[in-house]
Image 1 (cartoon, each protein chain N blue to C red):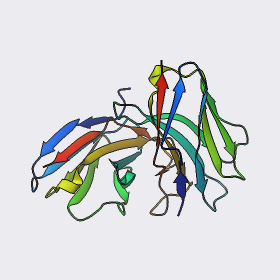
Image 2 (tube, chains in turn orange, green):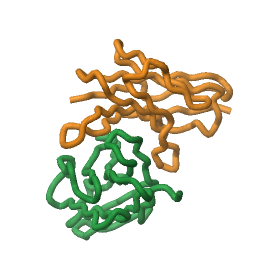
Image 3 (spheres, rainbow over the protein chains, first blue to last red):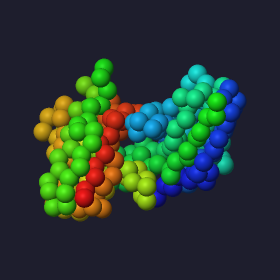
Length: 117
Length: 114
């Protein structure tokens, strides 16, 4: 079974600074998908960024980028120019490209990010 | 598009009562997922549908839980009878045409069972 580990429960960053959130995963698959989701106080789960394991290039979405290290099974999220609205819980998630009972979106425990004014 | 719509947003009920949570997926999405989020267990997949057919319900905790998808634009998650340990936030999500397409989540329903 796949596992996703987010070892940092909380982080804090000054507004306009850069912060990196860590995530590691364990799998024997060679092809899979990785995601970062954001959950603000409103509780809604919002997709931040997605990475396909077969792509070597790191995904980027505006101020959000990932550092995908496939050999190390590491998938960190970098938030540049942090904004107060980035305050939220962030979840790392893993999915392998199969259907049925053996595949699902597996989430880490999440990390609470606070952006200080 | 309005996104995934869930109702109610909050539900407070007493132990033993029946609870029905509702979800309208994004139009054109073939997959629908039900998740539960608690502090202790994090986010758990309960069940998912493809083209209105339940594919995997292995995450449904027990027989008190049931889910249906009578058509492409509506799904329900029912708990009967409800228990205090069912208190959680329940999310519905949908994705386009492939299982590995990005899942888009609804705002969630916060259920409190007294």
